[in-house]
Image (cartoon, rainbow, N blue to C red; front, side, top):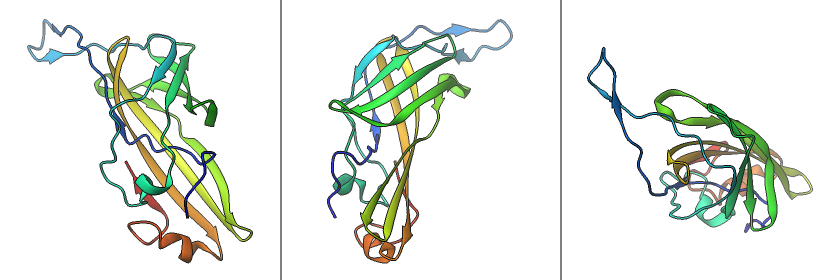
Length: 167
């Protein structure tokens, strides 16, 4: 079952270049990297790779080509993910968490495999920025299925069952 471009992405893991200065706390001599907020605008994906692929996402999930950040503040921003000109899922909020990493809300999609089988996708991104123009991150993609055709659809995954996850 080859999925069409309307089917969501698996942002595997992605990376960029850049570096920020570090600083030392007066109470602690450990080096702490400050959080960096992204520039607002369009970001292109490059250097993506699946690390753990239970769902066989490399074969069946369309990878995104870009994401757009908006409403950037010190500790949050909004993000939309695209495959060429098509919006994938919905806009999500990303909030600064531990270790200078932004945790984003789940991006969801669903589609029918046939008239009696629905596939549900949830992709949860997290990312950090080494400077305003360089990001690294990961997305956990979880696929689930409901309906009479799920056993057949599951044979196309590496795990053979639903739900499955890929990062």
